[in-house]
Amino acid sequence: MSNTIIINKKIKSYKKTIVVGSDKSISIRTILLASQALGISTISNLLESEDVLNALNAIKKLGIKYKKKGNKYKIYGLGLNGFKLNQNTTINAGNSGTLARLILGLLVKSDQKIKLIGDKSLSKRDFSRVTNPLKQFGVNIKSTKNSLPLEIHGTEFLRPINFIENIGSAQCKSAVMLAALNTPGKTFIKAKKSRNHTELLFKFLKIPMKLNEDKNYDYIQITGQSFFNCFKYSVPSDISSSAFFIVLTILSSKSEITIKNVNINKSRIGIIKILKMMNCNIAFKNIQNYHGEKIADINVKSSKNIRSINCPSKLNSSAIDEFLVIFLVAAKAKGVSKFSNLEELNKKESPRLNIAINILKMMGIKVIKKKNNIKIYGNQKLELQGKYNIKNYMKDHRVAMTSIIAALVFGGSWKINDINSINTSFPSFIKLIKNLGAKIN
Image (cartoon, rainbow, N blue to C red):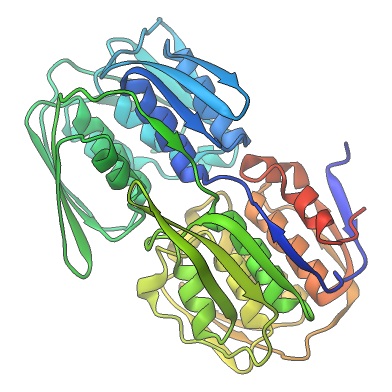
């Protein structure tokens, strides 16, 4: 199969109901927690993307068995620190920062040295935000440049820590929470607001945890060495995957879409809040609660008179994976949109902020960047006629999908390379887009 696609035509009007891929963040977390539970856990609707399959391969390397039947995975957990470790074990996290950072938290008591590696992109990302607090537990971690590859060797003499997480990184917070599971005593975490999937899963599994919060921080206390039982869980659809179809519909003519059974956790819906502030037509329907996660159908209609926005930076952490498509909406808005404190965007799979600016400028959109703040000068009449070649973006799946959306709504002739990167998070993306009527070669 070719790793390049060509798009020469805008998408025509459509009215559809779809189901997007399952939530990647929750898929990986349920796999890791099932490996530590006592007994056989059953996970339905697990996202079968490369990142999630790497998580399954990782626990298998650590001696945890799993089986698939239909859309259900059975994971045979052996309890806390139940891994059966061999000498010279290497875990390959591929492109997944979530897997790489979280699994370190489960290896803090390992009696063998474990090597953790990743792909070229992941190997450039900073791991000190996770390794520094894990070292405070007493764990031995060796890395030459605070990045992958690294080597972790656990200890029987773990000590609880008091940790302040000031970045707003759910991965960092979750790694410390998982490390606390095997640590005697009480671990305290003061964490800047970020995704709370791990906390909700801890509550669901009745892991001893106290949680308080104020406007900016969550205060988490975990009592370690408390075994928990196996569980059943059905993973809802992913808001980050839904974002591409939300923006596609907003920017398409006379179109409407309903995306079924999407996780609308409050720590993940920054994109919805931002787009509503921009006068986009979005509504939640059939809202339900599932083990603490809020689930809903998302209805979206084409939107005219899109307004520019001075985006509150407090929404950054809850929209961090969706800013690339939000920038496409800003490109079609009336006026100048302002976004600030976006430094985390350049610490993702690629320097996403820099790449997004390059794509917008290539489309003829005026963008001014000052430090980590940008201004996007919208053009309500934006229609593209030229040729656009998207390459050299470090095979970042979200850049690839964003480029496809841009091609389908703004026109022009687009050649988009390295589309196999989409399998990292959303293997069914191209098929779903085609089912809406998109012409993709």
